[in-house]
Each structure stands twice: as structure tokens, then as C-alpha cells.
Picture (tube, rainbow, N blue to C red):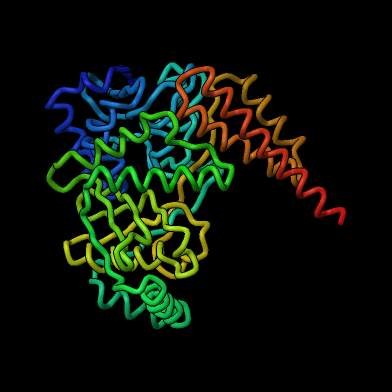
Length: 378
């Protein structure tokens, strides 16, 4: 049956539509991550530039929703590049439109996604990792230590070393909603972006407002809060996480430079899981695979899709041609530049901001390519 799509401002969602959305989320474990909850869209759409919602109808009945933002003629998941999971939120037993059809449904030239759920059969796909604590922290911790004893003993030593270095007790505080502490975390992250040459996603302003709005909004079973690992009288690590129901999503971590050798971020993850599992959280989401430490914590593996979906045939041909001529280091550079540009495009809403971000991304990419060439010829 034909699908009809209404594209509306997020503020135009009525109470009955929000309740229907909530029913869709509760009916399918695919949507357990809080990024799919209507509360996420309601809160962040107040500060995200050009926030919209696609409302899908069949035979006059609402059968789905997709929250997104427009950047020029490009559609992106709402709050990109900070939205780690996204996709169509559909009623039970509804036929799912193909990802390739989405730009047309949204009346956009392209759609850029980095965590599309469920993963598209055409790929390219990325792994995401989660930890299952449905049987409680005690059983989980014992199983992890049995499987990876050396790793966890090393972290126990790191905790003792951190206490000695800071000449004080090491402990973790959860459910922190202090705006000043969030500002400190953002400052740490911005310094990290400068040191690593990554685009500063917080320079545009609205991205910080998203985190602040989520952290300060109190709603039942949904929100964002910080956890702080204290060592002595100063934080050694902090992380802002998003939660919904029994799902806890680790989101924005950072740590103090002087504590780096003691793995403070890993210690904070351990403590957060122990403390928050006691509050009823069952699934702890570590996001994309990549960092080696995650394999020691996670026992659930899922897949999501990261790609740019182009609407017209000539755009797809040009994109495919770029892939075909890119080999070796050049292919890696192409993929890196695409990913960096997606972040720049999502954050920056002015031409000047996009130009600065694109230039910086190109310079960083060329430096990496030159460094690879020099190391290969050495």
C-alpha cells in the first residue's frame, strides 16, 4: 500500500502522536536505545537548527516517524553528529522502506547516517558493543574477571596507583547534573579535539545546548547525567551518558591528562556499571567498536550502517567512481575525509563555518597521507 509522508516541524507533534511514537518504541527491542525515544526528539529539537520529523502514513493511519535535521539539501539524523543510533520508528509488522528510498521520502538530495538501525544489507556496516547485566553486577563481574583476569587485575592496580598519585581516595559519583561540571567536561573534550586534529563539535554552540538541555530536563525513565571519578580532591575522569528505561548509553567521556596512565576512563566505566546496575539498568551501551578495552566489557555485538545515500543516479555513479579510483592509503583518506565532512556539515550551519571545517579536515588528511608515504619510503 502506498506510503504517504508528511514533513513537519518537531514542535508540531501532538500529544496523541507522541504517545503513538512511544507505543512503537515499547513494542520492539530494536528501539530500546534512548536515541529512539520521543523524549529525545522533544528535548533536542528545541535547540537543534532546522529540526524536523517525517510522519509516515498508510491508508490514513500513522505507521512511523523519523526525526531528522536539514543541512542545505542534505538530511541527517536529528542532533547529528551526536546521534549514535537512528532509523525509522515503525508500528509493529509494518513493511520497512529501503534506506535507498529515504532521500526521496525526505525530499532531500542525500541522507547521511552513521548508526542506521537495523543495519542495511548493502552496507557498509559498523559493529557496536554492549554489556548485558540482566543477571546483576556480581555475576557479570565474576564472568568478566574469569575470562580476562589479567586485564582486570591490571585495572585494580591502576586504581591503587591513581590513589597514590593523587594522595587521596578514588571513588565515583553518579547522577551529577551540575552545569559547571558539564562545562568542565566540554572544555576537556575541546582540548582533546585540538590535540588530535578532529573537528571541534562544540565550537558551533548548539551541540553544547543539546547536552545541557538533556541533562537539565527531568523526565521519568529518560534523561542524561554525568558520572565523575574522583581521585583526591579533583576529578580524574568524567562522562555524560544518555539513558532510557533499562538502557544506559555511555556517550561523552574524557579524563584529566595527569591521570592518563591510570586508565581513569575505564575505571569510571566499571564503577558506573556497578552503581547504575543497582538502580535497575540492564544494558550498558559502549557504542562503536574500535577501542581495544571495550572487548573486555562487552558480550553483545550488533551492527549498524554508516553511509551517504544519494538520491539521483548520477550522484551515485560519481560517488562509486571516487571509491574505485581510491586504493590503499588514498582509499583510507577518502573514507576519513567523508567522515570528517559529515561531522563538519552536521555541526556548522553557516558557509564560513563549513569552509573552515572542510579546510582543516583536508589539511589533516593530507598530513596523514604524507606521513604514511614518508614512513613507507623510509
